[in-house]
Length: 228
Length: 310
Image (cartoon, rainbow over all chains, first blue to last red; front, side):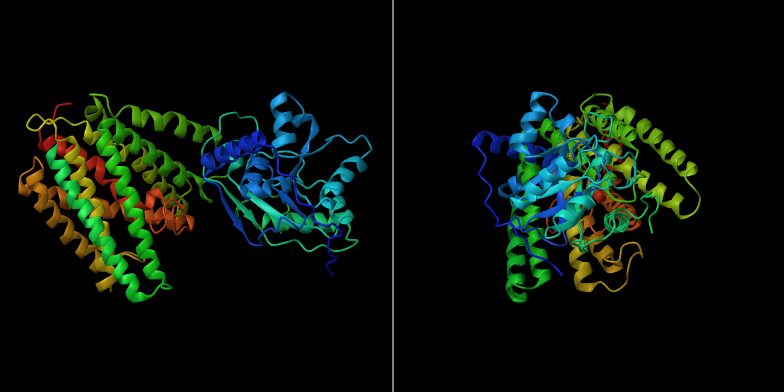
């Protein structure tokens, strides 16, 4: 069973020239520093909403996934990011709004998780794709943290969206948490097989399944506590 | 300097001839054939490499230094980026290598004392490699660590000697730096091509289980070719023909050893190519592996033979 998307794919508006130039410069810098290589097992059709969920170990992560798709498709790929980080200071505010087109959500929901979910659902229904970090925060070292339930909620609300795990190799070594100067290690983004969506699946079962699909793309010596 | 450009016309001629032969072979094999495509990729790759080298020759020693910096930087990235190299939290040691050791290794090259301190640096590096060897767990892991750190030493310390050749001023031939470097590059790199061709045509007996594509027939073909070429070239260099033959033999043997060292590191990591930098050639390390050990040894032999003081 694969219910098709209710969304009529609305073409994304072409961003203004200055923003596009900034995007090209940033993507070029990311690619130059990392010689970024994207390995797709299932190519992405930008007209079909897809939820990419990615391991998180570096501030460069969302920029790297964003840079690994062609420039004209980038406005369709919207990172779900913490509002407290991306609204601090004019540069981040500009980048998140005009270059990354981020979907900004509160980290601490104070009992109103519906708000963030509604924004993500609205983006998917608009025909955009989402880039999620289900660990919720950046990990340190060679680990994959337990997943937060957010990914499960979005998938249950929008079961027609495709779900794909993405393993980013090396940004966590080249620019780990707490460092400022990037080290130009070669980076790869592995876009794995699509995760089948099962209607009404409990969040424990779903998150476990999603997590092992992501772990399968990572290195074999990964210390993901419950790697099965 | 005229000697250098005479050599370059020969190199350019060889590239044109080689490309013509490759195009003929591809026509014979048909457009869909993988070997034919790979040969064309290799020829195009060589055109890029020779273009970069020609630019370095035109720019003189600073150009050579810039090219060496790029080669070492890319080599370091390839060596340190692959899965199985680290357990994650190694930012500090990466930072030391990329922002400390690498700039230092390049910045020392133009210094007049480079030839005198380089053996000391090499020995200190070897001591560190042995320290890493003894501190790693015994067995297979220890052998892997040894090979990897030796490759790292070759990349960081060995490769910059290529640029250092440009800065050599032997008393008998003070302007011969570029030709001394060109001699090594020609002998070692063209022997790679000769090994490939004779291996493809005659290869039956594998040279080493570590590197299935290398054969004894390829080894012999490369040896004959490089020693023959080196001896023929002696007229363009400050060497006698005996010196040229001996140097090219040594450079060839160390070139093969460097290639085997890096292919065993590659095998430890389960890689086919170090990166996808140049189609048909693979990564930077796939191209320069034969210079890792030969460059520093050749550099110091040349200093001894030509009684060079700086």
